[in-house]
Length: 103
Image (cartoon, rainbow, N blue to C red; front, side):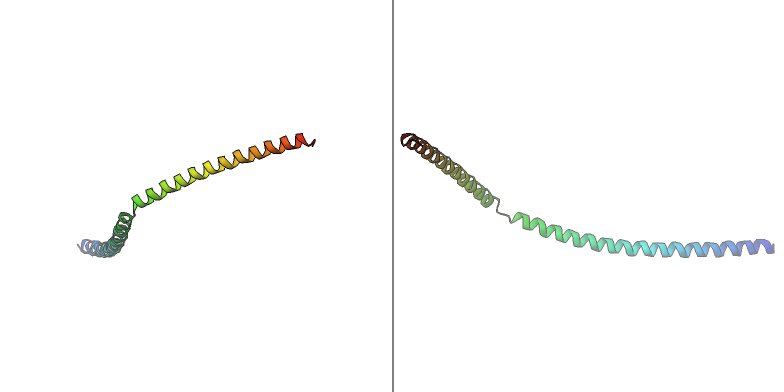
């Protein structure tokens, strides 16, 4: 009978240790969960602010600017083509004059 009582005491002591470790683990998990919840709230607030900033972007203004830039590039291409044409004519005139004066 004494042996059973000793065995029960050892088992009870072991169960207390296990219960204490489980309680500590539960506290650590609760603290980690609260820290994670705080971080999630902060990230959520930052995302909300970013979404608001994206909503304020003037897409129409950007599109108009791009259209104006494309028109300007087209004008520059036409100007470059005209300069190339004039350059070609000057070369032709130079060749003609060179032929006339025996170059």
